[in-house]
Length: 258
Image (spheres, rainbow, N blue to C red):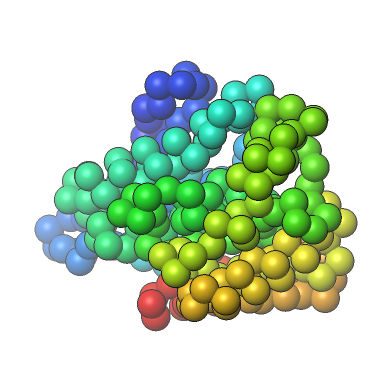
């Protein structure tokens, strides 16, 4: 496996893309893989390690080549820097499809919380040809049209007093159209940090636009479950994963059936 850290973004020298590329020796000669670009959460203040490499390794084991995008955060999250970075990451993966042994028509994005907002922004704000082929969105920050994670919005807008135009741009459910890529979404009903209504508003917008989607809801669980196992959430018993841990297998199956 080749792991490489690429500092490839002009606006923020700290932002980078990490590659997790399986070897393809002649005796295996695997067909080109699907690619998945992972955007960790962190309220646009940091990028969570629990939602980075552990996720990449899970999808690597399921036949994907994986990439983790450590996008701009804190004061560097304004001016749409994360959107520019995920656009550049998608382009980089597609442009290097042969070298990475991936299918350029199967480049997916996966995001958690504010990272899901980054992922969703690539499917709603970018030109159609630059968008990913599908999205997996885990307890996503979506919108300000309902109670949301205010810290994410403030960092995205670069101010605690955003203008109406900035709030409208942040509210990605308002930008869903028929060209938005298919989306797999999951959330817990009692998420205390990012209310589940974010996902429900998004699903309503996707449905109205005729976009293929799937919503997976769990009645109980804290924010930031990641894999929903002991590995990424120490409060979860090692021998008793949270019910939400099924999301990885279900998302994988859904992506492969597109």
